[in-house]
Image 1 (cartoon, chains in turn brown, orange):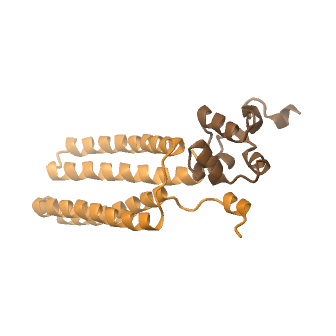
Image 2: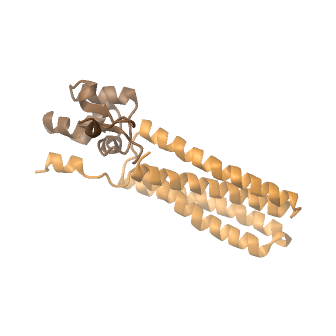
Length: 79
Length: 147
């Protein structure tokens, strides 16, 4: 989706957490596998509650799992 | 042995809810296309006959949806709904509201032009059906393209 500016490293952290599957993460967070897939694919920006739950399930701080790409200045532009 | 990583990374196939939306969309298109084709060809002279046809179409739509949903549920268990489902439903309902609002103005036009109760009722029904189709279509698009 063009308007989704929340980027994430869920996939990397899932593999780092013993190759946790999308289904396993979805079960821990309390959403469907389709929702985890959509978040990973950056087609859906989760609510804060779900974002915190995902970070907690992956045992990572929130800002390592999710980062927001500002409309004014993206990280690539700031380098 | 199943590869854990491979099975988790693929794009999920159609969920129960998406299949349910497709069933509703196709049933509505087929049944109400037939209804409006008959209603417009018969005209207000056969209003009683069209009334019976309307009841038949509604009953048929309910039966088809129940049977198809049971068949799909046997094959694939319904998933729980979560925040994404609710957000998609809200966005799709907003779209259908706009369509319904345009439809309501068209019905007002039909009423002002004194076409008669039969045509006003059918124009109103058409507006409701088109609005519902836009809701179903929007949901299907949002599920695939993101919301």
